[in-house]
Length: 218
Image 1 (cartoon, helix red, strand yellow):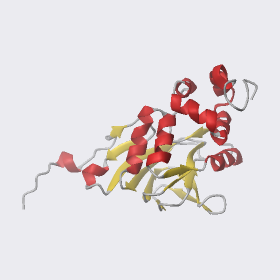
Image 2 (image 1 turned 90 degrees about the horizontal axis):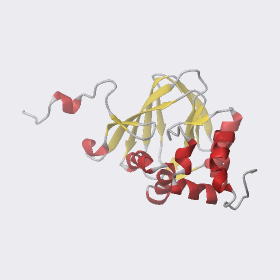
Image 3 (image 1 turned 180 degrees about the vertical axis):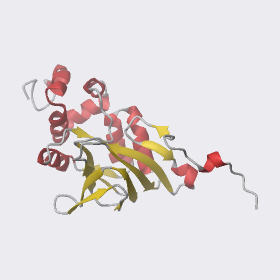
Image 4 (image 1 turned 90 degrees about the vertical axis):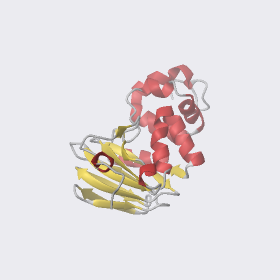
């Protein structure tokens, strides 16, 4: 039986894939797979946390290629476990999850997600971090447990967020949606000030005085 396919339709070579503005690389979009699921590759650098969140619409699966990741599923009263290279991890919809890297090398993984919501979320990073988070909450059925992220960052003395690909605080300050997030979400302010420290505070001092929590000394 003849098929209208070529090897290039079916084989995705190492290093190939669609780079995004986030830390995720899209290997195959869900439209290519009948709208059922997408395939991506991600990474978590040393001392980074993939912050806690919940998907209302997607079930997810991870295969860890390199390194070891520490997981918390179900929030502070849930379960914790460690998974290393060669492990598969399931993340059911409706269940809070996050993971972090305590090792000295970058952990890499493959992620499959049902439906198209997570793919849309990743694409949204190109419009800025504030829009990415805001659209996910308003349109994609995702929620973010920001306070829990701050607790775990402090517990393990983690120093960065995986996934968001924030290299320059100035990018955040130029993002109107991020400025709105900082003005209205106290836990988001705590999270980004914890991570950004003096550098981020210096970057935002020009508009801190306009926010409801005070001025540059905050």
